[in-house]
Image (tube, rainbow, N blue to C red; front, side, top):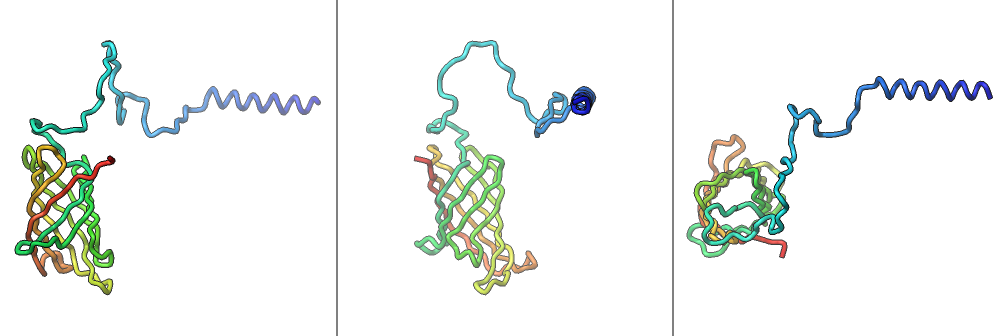
Length: 190
């Protein structure tokens, strides 16, 4: 019994000592030092709460900052042809990046990654690349796609022009260049 008491007292002393003198450990991605904070919540206002819409999702015709950000179905039609030669699902992100999943055979490449910037009130410029492959699995080279699009004032469709340049593996020798028109329709959760 005496031995058990001594073991318990020693164990409790070690735990107490460790608790008092151990550095604070935090499992967090955020520091608590305000001078090094990665992000902060806004200060609480002393004003009374007002109830109403938190965000506005419908863009009206008078707005000048309609956004291209969102999920789109896009069709590409080459100059001199009336039939779209490619369709895609496209995601424009708020950080200026974009990803496109083309209807092309995935063995030849069906994904493009890109960057975009606003070029005017309703205008956007996009540049994205895909690595192209032939049907046998051999790399062809990078394909560069440049798009200039104009968003309608309701922010639910866009139209524009594109140029696709297919390069050889050296990234400079042009194999083919195709230009044409494109149109996009926003996909919503409803």
